Image (cartoon, rainbow, N blue to C red; front, side, top):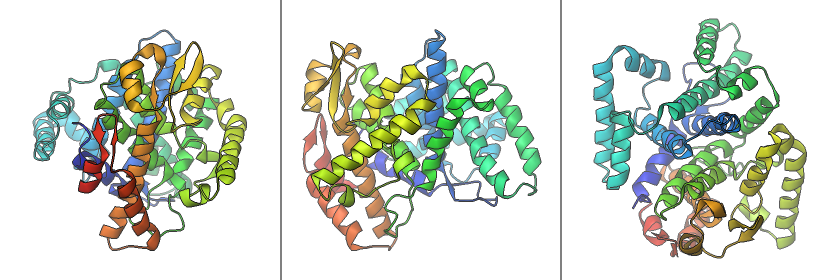
Length: 397
């Protein structure tokens, strides 16, 4: 099984890995946030390439995004510039470092298939095709540069700021053959979409409840996408189902970029209020988010953000709700049905909330809200969804 409690706990550590912590910065930059932004950018870049007639291996892009996050969590003490210098100039040390990372995952007793994929990705560098890696590297460089611009804005004359700026722009130059990169650096409308998504790093979840770590909506989106990836793998997905579930998880909170995060007890205080909030989110998304996208991408983003926790397929051009994950697996697990497991995304969303509450209590910061969240979610998930026994997962988280 891919969906082991230990892999979700490892993912959650991404919320405690700091970036740029040797520089004056407006907020703490967190590894999980950065990888979320990176994967949003990767989606945009790959979409442009698809439009230009180039075949994109979305499964490899997803795997590369998730597995690189896991590697960065393990080597958290090594700054990115140092990591890339080791990779470039010290091949033997780089190989030993990657073997050490793999050894770390091996002692966690992960699923054998997952371990083999991690070995191919981390040690052999042979899991992801060259073009997918090119898109991921471009997304990594550009998302890092957007972080740097926030640092530069508040400390323009700081130590090595101009040098870092020149070096990062030089790094981005090697990706100019990608239409998306050219559009981003020339500040076309897609750059506004990318920057709007980046603002989700400023929105703190559970904002009225003291917690450690303080997680953002942006980072939460990457956790949900990554957790959904593992949950989906255990349901034998067709390629489109894996794509929809990962990017559906990544974009499920996108409307909050224009409404802010509203905690679940407030949203669900009445059916009418929950429906009103959803209507406002949809209206604002139509006015402020969708115009920033290429028109042909909008139906897909709507599919991800409207009724985002419903299982659904597309049949004869119409979106049809499906009762269970098992029904999708048994009857609609083909690309032509565009299957989407909203129930798995919701389960990953709730798992994120559970780990946020439990982690804070483990660090010694507790409250009635956090304690009730743990109790209620654990009770709610004493059940199976698809091929996954969530009761077993929650009992070990």
